[in-house]
Amino acid sequence: MELTTDDKQFINDVKAIVYKAKEKAYQAADIYQVISNWLLGRRIVEQEQHGKTRAEYGKRVIELASEALTDEFGKGYSASTLRNYRKFYLSFKGLQIQQAMLAEFNECCMNQQAVLADSLPSNNKEESVYPMPLNLSWMHYERLMRVKNENERDWYLREASAENWSYPSTED
Image (cartoon, rainbow, N blue to C red):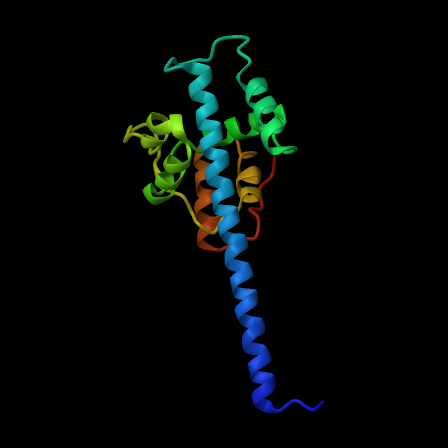
């Protein structure tokens, strides 16, 4: 069957719509994965420390969370993964999760109002606070956590976002 120019344009248009919708869906999934991982890391730190500067030695917080999450959601919540989420939060404490996104998490999390309501970092002069880039995936943050120097890590975060790097080119 011979396609007209109009038919070809129609096919290109419907394909473009689907491609764009899929791209946006993947981007949204990445954003919420980053938010979820940050909030999980924050909650683990809070449970470990209960307002203290350091965690109590020997607390089983990560193991407890790993068992419960694996039972509920299946693979993907090993103790090492949750330790990585804790490291993510500690590495990016100043990451400012948007209020609208936090409100969505508040709606679904019954006993977490106090935890999530104050998820925006305080304006501590020693702590850098910056908005969460919406174009960076979890893979970006995993790579950025390898950068030990906080100033360098923050610079790479901003550059990766501004320049739309596929993944930050960092060295261990």
